[in-house]
Image (cartoon, rainbow, N blue to C red; front, side, top):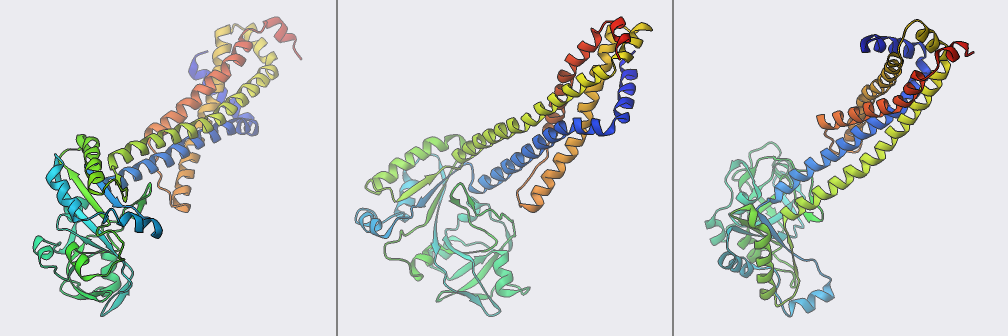
Length: 411
């Protein structure tokens, strides 16, 4: 008997015992489905992390003003004014390999309105270099320029969500909006680039669609702020090459420590380090989830072995007849191994469908990103088939070693 004949015979036998075959395959189905679903969720989360970190920039070092309690803030301000334009100038003049430095200040926008509506966006004072650093694209108009910063111009660049809230479907360029008590002229509208994730590992990313950008000098001169608040909320430092981020980050940290008199009223975020940490966490997640899902495959393999042992006992007389008419031990071995393999292969196929369905349901119901990859499907089905072959070997060997005369006498 060749492998093809053994496969046909095995499928006929499985079809004759549909319920038993289905129950035997359940362990493999659950295991393969769990592996694919878990790896798909992990791959989706990793892709989202990469997209999110790319918004921060792998060549960037982000310096953020630290949030402190009011009592602690009073003591800190006696030594340091906080993150300021002085830090920006010092970094530009001192740190080697710096391409761009862009300050940013967040404005407490109590009211944002225009002639045709109101909005609740984030309002930020930025420099003319912010668009290049943040990868902002314009749908209409222009971004802030050096003259806007020099003249403390009352101009604004708005996101698409802000445009819809304030102006509906009317053109926004040249129109005016009011932030707190300051009127601003709209000179640009950002392209709706999406990006729903506003935080990543505690780092605020902001939403460009629901944002208003004004000159940082205008924000500092014409908007009120808390007396003890730092002049700047954030400084983004872009380096000329990604390879030197770690070393430059250490130089920046040492420079700021001197400028701030040793007071830690700021924090450094290195996206490159965040990416490495995210990948380590993701690998650990995949390993843990893979082990948990692998348990189901092992249980499924034990189920296949038990059923195959019972099948050998049930078909002992059949084995004796086949041996009596000339079947070799090898033929019996191949027949039962192929039958075990067919069980695991069918379970693997059903498990693949179940795993993809689970990933889609999770993506739709929980809003988690999922990504079904070819290698996750290949890994899950490959392990399932290996489990089927391993689990079926001992029962097949036991069947092949039966004495033909004893098998014929078995009742």
